[in-house]
Amino acid sequence: MGPTRRNILGAALLAAAAPRAWAQTPAPPTGPHSLPPLPYAPDANEPHIDAQTMTLHHDRHHAAYITNLNAALKDQGTLAALPVPDLLARLPETPEAIRTALRNNAGGHANHSMFWSVMGGKGGLPTGAVAAAVDRDLGGTDAMRAAFSRMGLAQFGSGWVFITVDRDGKLALAARPNQDTPLMEGGRVLLGNDVWEHAYYLKYQNRRADYLAAWWNVVNWDAVARRYEQAKAGTLGV
Image (tube, rainbow, N blue to C red; front, side, top):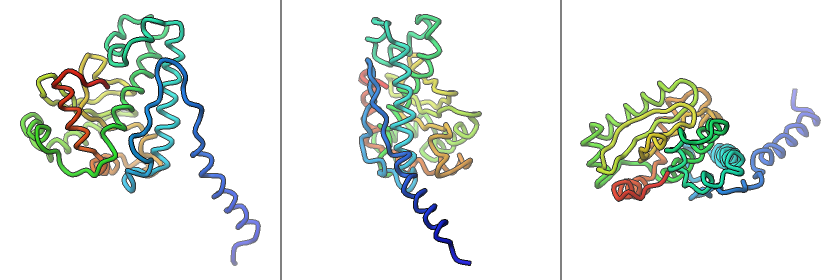
C-alpha cells in the first residue's frame, strides 16, 4: 500500500520543522566573555563532522558555557577582568561558591575555543617543526595518533584528549574529564579533541573510535604550526 496523504503531509511538516529547530541561533552571551565565531563555515568539516553537529556544538553548547561563565563572574570585577588561561590557573584562589562553575564553564570556553581553531583543514600530516617534535616526543605521527585514540577511547564518559606543549616545544599526551584542561595546571594545549557525545553523536552514535579516526581528516596543521610557534614564544592563549 502506498503512502497516504496524511503520512506524506506529516513527513513534509517534520522535514520543514527539523532544520529550523537546530538552525535557530540563541541570543549571544553578554558579559566579559563572548562567543568567538567559527573561523570557517559549519559545513567545512563535511563529511567527517556534519554541519548540524557543528552548528549545535558551537551555537548552543559553547555559547552556554560562556553564558554560565559570565553569570558566575557577575560582581567579580577582578576575576572578570582576567584572561581565561589566568582565570583557570588561579582556580584554587577563587571563591568556593563559584569555583565549580568557573572550572566547568571557563574550561568549556577554553577547550572549545581551541577546538574550533585547529579544525577546518584537510588533515594530512604535520610538517616542519611540529613534525619534528612529534617524531622526537611522541614516536612519530602513526604512534601519536594511535596513542591519542587510545586515550580518547579510554576516557570514561565525557572529556577531552590533548597534545600539550611547553615553552621548549616539548609535546606530551594528556586526557582530562569533563571540561578540565591542562590550562588549570598552567600548561598549554597544542591541539585537542572533544570526546563528549555532543561532539559526534548525530553522525557516529556510540562509535567514538570512528569519530576519533575521522577527526584527523579535518585537522588544520597550518593552524597547529602557528600555535606551536606561539607556545614557544610564550604568547599562546587558550
